Length: 150
Image 1: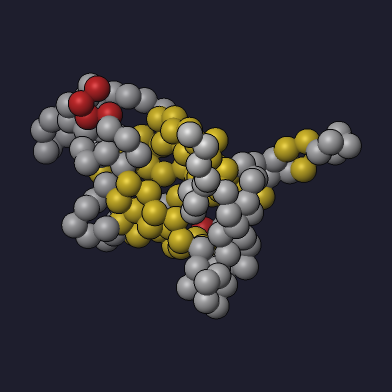
Image 2 (image 1 turned 180 degrees about the horizontal axis):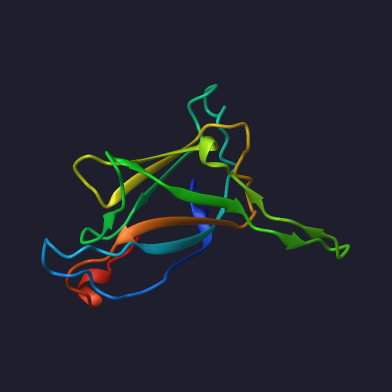
């Protein structure tokens, strides 16, 4: 039956660079895997909404077997509003957030969960396409049971 969209994303995609599993031993260095997340927000995400300076937070939960790459719970993400071509055939270039415009933190208990806080006046505009790239360590075992949902 027809429903309605709340505070959510549409047109979502998740693309890892590799589906290789992490090494099972502690003394072998793990390789970070960039995961590209595409989304189109239904509502605008603004640093000043609902109250000045406390809005604009994105929370991403990877399946439990994945670990977000971090240094003392700080993580790096790349966020951009994707470029597009208007109806008048004008090209609009992508808009990138600088590292100083985002704060990425990993949950201290659930290390598969990260929170991205936007700190500048740039808004994530409704109906526009965005790309967020986060680094993860893949699970030691890999298969349908560890893929989970993001």
